[in-house]
Amino acid sequence: ALQSVSPSSASVAEEARAILARLGVPDSAFAPTGRPALSPITGEVIAHVRETTPEEAKAAIGRADAAFKAWRTIPAPKRGEFIRLLGEELRAAKDDLGRLVTLEAGKIVSEGLGEVQEMIDICDFAVGLSRQLYGLTIATERADHRMMETWHPLGVCGVISAFNFPVAVWSWNAALALVCGDSVVWKPSEKTLLTALATQAIVERAAKRYGGVPEGLCEVLLGGREIGEILVDDHRVPVLSATGSTAMGRQVGPKLAQRFARAILELGGNNAAIVAPSADLDLALRGIAFAAMGTAGQRCTTLRRLFVHDSVYDQLVPRLVKVYGSVKIGDPREQGTLVGPLIDKAAFEGMERALDEARTAGGKVHGGGRYTDVAADGLYVRPALVEMPKQTGPVLRETFAPILYVMRYTDFDEVIEQHNAVGAGLSSSIFTLNMREAEAFISVTGSDCGIANVNIGPSGAEIGGAFGGEKETGGGRESGSDSWKAYMRRATNTINYGNTLPLAQGVKFDV
Ligand code: NAD
Image (cartoon, rainbow, N blue to C red; front, side):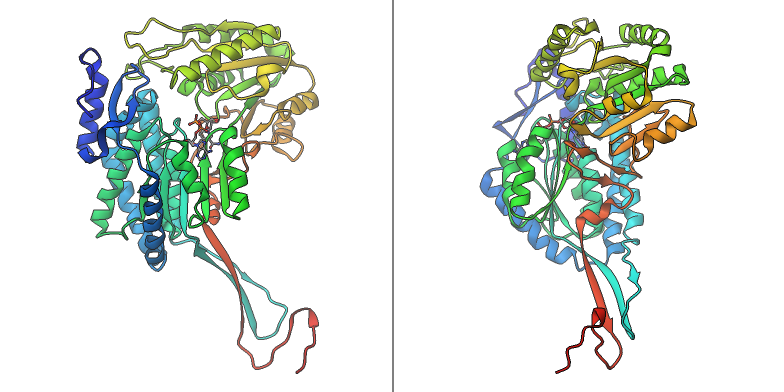
């Protein structure tokens, strides 16, 4: 399968193949009839990946279930040792895996590396966590009794991930789930199979150094939605973390609810920022540019709506338009590139459609359209800044491309209302030096999102905090803080060390 690379565009494919070989991905992962793995940089096929059959998927879930039964009995700090080794292996493979993220997902070099750094960070976090899976001791109303809670592993944790964070999202879930005592079955995006194979090879190296983990502890299912559906429907999977579009969540969520499985839904965003009259405009400009154009607008936390106070609009927006016109678009491997390619043709068409709708709704479009001044022939676009008369039409939904809708506001309460008047509730921010506004924005009456920032853009979260959002973003939380609790079950234990049997609430039942 690796032979099917056209000579004219051999460089991306050859580099990717060399990385896969270095990381130890076996030849058996590829087959001439497999699913083509494309690079958005050039549009070329890197390799054909052998997909998992439904029978193989079910067998993998069975192995993961058996692995869980052994893994749960290993003390948590010893499970943490496996994640410590995984972190070490990721450190050693950082350049290769980061580069592969660039080649397969089209992220610029520093973002590809940053994604692997995030995997390393969550491993460090999870190692510490492996000694801190605490339960409470709770005051009991009964004499000579003790009440406490114990956290136990839950079972097989399914992970479905999206193309735009092809490896970090797996690690946010897997590092936590594994120290919690769960096994993990991963269904990566069908658009990023190579980085999944590479990650699996790294996991296997860590497992070997650990001295062996139960067979099936970390399984990968390669394929499209049908393979994901098998994971969603399998009763042996008590917890499933699904990252992707809200449309995907609408299909997956009810199915999990139907069988009472735990859902960690990490869905689409339609993130906004407010630029208030007192804002530090230089800082705001940089924050907005990164949040709106970084990753070519293909982050769940990408800034998509910008509300600028009337008093600073004419200072800020022309400067922003200038930045939009000068940002370096192109091959993400090249130094200085800030905006790489879109993932595929569908993404490009979605962007075109949204811009047409915006124009019809009275929007003034700066930028946008195909950018062809690139040696490689992937789908490159000019990021678009659209001045909108009001929040309407395409502004109300997530278009997974670099479009920033800009609107004026005058009243703080009204802008908060507008801010919250969309389906998604992932990330948000305000640029202000006014303490009352800053506090109001993050207060109960402010942003309704899972992430609310002050004087930084909505994108680029750290692993230490809980990550996720409300409403159509699905309500799940991953990564830091106490997100680990979603991967465990809580037992409340009451122990009577006396020789009488007092009942709760003073109930008498003398027999
Ligand atoms: P997508 O919804 O097309 O696919 C995501 C994953 O879900 C893929 O692995 C896909 O195969 C699988 N899938 C789709 N339908 C399924 C079904 N019915 N059953 C089981 N599996 C199914 O998303 P995408 O285009 O890869 O990624 C972009 C989207 O992901 C955006 O909406 C973005 O906001 C969102 N996203 C959210 C977060 C977050 O943490 N909230 C993070 C990254 C991306």
